Amino acid sequence: MRLEKARACVLRVGGTNCDLEVKVALEELGLQTEILHMNQLKKRRLSDYHMLVFPGGFSYGDYVRAGAIWGRQVITKFRRDLEAFVNEEKLVMGICNGFQVLVEAGLLPGNGVSGVPTATLANNSSAKYECRWIRLRVDGKRTPFTKIMKVGEVVRIPIGHGEGRFLLPSEGALKELIKEGQVVFRYALPDGKPAEGAYPHNPNGAVYDIAGICNKKGNVMGMMPHPERAFFGWQTPVWGAEPPEHGDGRKIFEGAVEYLKRY
Amino acid sequence: MKVKVEVRLKPGHFDPEGDITAKSLRDLGFRVKGVEVSKVYTLDLEARDAEDGVRLTKDMCRKLLANPTKDNFSVEVLPGEERTVEKGKR
Image (cartoon, rainbow over all chains, first blue to last red; front, side, top):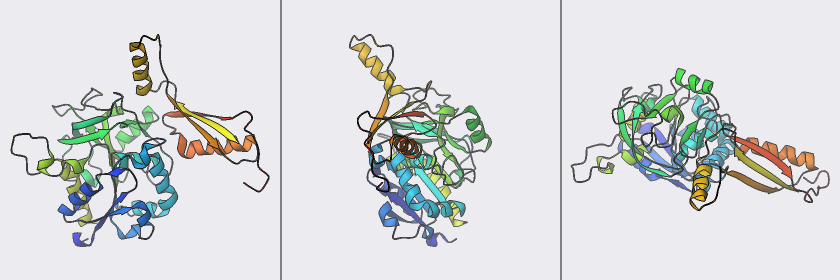
């Protein structure tokens, strides 16, 4: 597909944030992007888009659990459309609260739109809201979002969350996730090795240092860190120095755009 | 009828909120061994009878209020609040 024909939709509801940053990032890469309130989507067709982004924030005040209410709303309002969207191997991205939404709606780590969560993002082990730059190790290439990255590559991207401790119901579920190559990003030490749970490198206590995962096909990806906050060089924390041309988060969006060019 | 739902972490699950609360209480001089934090929802709902109310509420827990990876839930119809509705009016 010619990139000019591809379109992305960034959804928002009360309490979302960084929707504009995602739009700016994608448009910078040549992908036409609209921000739509979920209620506006009722009058549009999801099938007109090729990428759907659930941005970060605190949708519906994080009531019940982070992402729970928006997750259920997505299921009750758009289940069929979303199912078709995922089956057509279009891209779905969840950032931070958006990741929580995808987990609560059953899109991750599952393979479909089940509406039943099979994982959770629990309160950070530190019992704090963790808001800072962290290191991520690229762990999987199953998803287009890491298409232009190397396995083992370390990138720096900021986080900002209180509920990011990724948990699975069993040891077996974790083994399955690893075996299927669905682990996309892991929190890393300065030397690039996985954090092995060590705080503050793993900021939330997530099992297996998981910061981002994808579904089995790789077209649905969710991550706790905010790549749109590390897109431009001037967003990076390089006080007093010449900022780099690009932030590391750019590569994740570039991977998505590369995929859409070939879609 | 009024139904009380308590959603709590499954046994053995790490509860940072409980731990930090316990620590803070100990700092205040209280001899607290541990704290478990749970969430209570009091629902005012229409149901045929108590059994129906419990069934509906459990369904709500499965569909929204609890995440099966980390939460257990308990459901209780509040005494004196089990007033039922006429058949067909639900």
